[in-house]
Image (cartoon, rainbow, N blue to C red; front, side):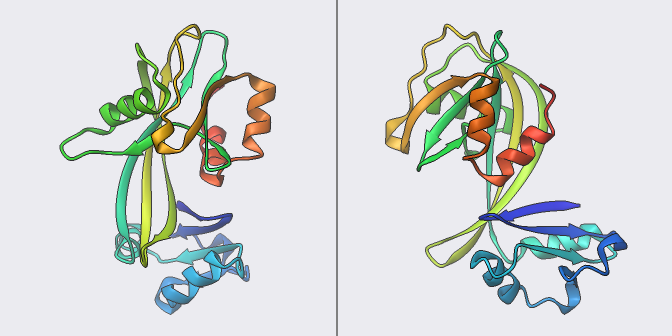
Amino acid sequence: MYTIFINDAVIYLTDNLKNKDAKSFVHYENAYMTDVLNALENGMLKRVHLYHENIDFLWQDFKKQFTIIEAAGGIVFNELKEVLWIYRHEKWDLPKGKIEQNEDRASAALREVEEECGLTNILLKEFIMTTYHTYQFKGSNILKVSHWFEMFAESHRKLTPQLEEGITKASWLNTIEMNEALNDTYENITLLFENVKR
């Protein structure tokens, strides 16, 4: 199954019939994608389960509706079990950014954390997962595919937010502060933390 966020709404792409009786369940062949996306974007729908028996076909065909942007980023822990967060556009977020041409995902994730937080000597650990969200930009539907890695850095390293990218804070947050940040972040970040070992 694929989980794709549009603002606070969500599309599930599935080949599982377990939700077939839900009002949100739609056979992909019967879906008018423009209407579905508009309804989710405008808050008229909160969730949709798009079903096709072949999940690979469903994913490949679904992506044709969008311009794809691939990004990479990290959940960075320190020795105190704190996590590195950034504050941008009035929301808490994690450092990430667009993968450059001929750049692999892990290298892009490290570079983006370094650039957005001014952090050096980062240890790359393991890949966590990929998240998906969509938005409109200059009349185009964008599907952002973000690849996330676990990382480690020491807490004494200086943090410098990348102001030119709209980042006003780069901060280590402890468990209490992080739980507050999770109430003021994006749904894909919440999903990401549900899939990482803390």
